[in-house]
Image (tube, rainbow, N blue to C red; front, side, top):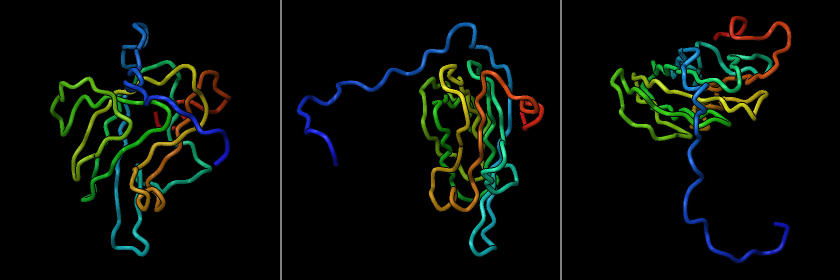
Amino acid sequence: MAGEPMDGALPGKLVAPPVIPAHAREVVNTRTVTFQGNIATVPVQFFLDGKPFSAARIDQAVLAGTTEEWLLVNQDVFRHPFHIHVNPFQVVELNGAPTGDDSWWDTFALPPLGSAKIRIYFRPDVTGLTVYHCHILPHEDNGMMANLLIYGDLPAGFGPSAHGG
């Protein structure tokens, strides 16, 4: 470790949850992301939308500053904690039933053979390539991760119609 030791009190409260501006509260797009596993192989394989992770592929492309709802469908017998980098999300339905909860999540445990509908506000100040994945390391390492392009200005040939959204 480098640097000088610091003294001081620990923060007394957590970071404030995101505030979605009025113009971005409307859901502009919906997507479905499917979690699957194959325990009959060695090593075990895990997939998002039927595909193992590839660093060379963009799986979803979203417009920064907009709000989307994603239906996360777990077709596997394992619980898969869903995590998306950069943007927290709200869980609005669990197994088809409204949650009535407006909490913000960083990671949410998707139930086995179940579903969750999440609402994500994609911050306008952070664009570029990031990932979403199962937060269990062996599942992620064996394919259950996908690339997400958050764009402001989009290069030619990229966009929701070209990449699953």
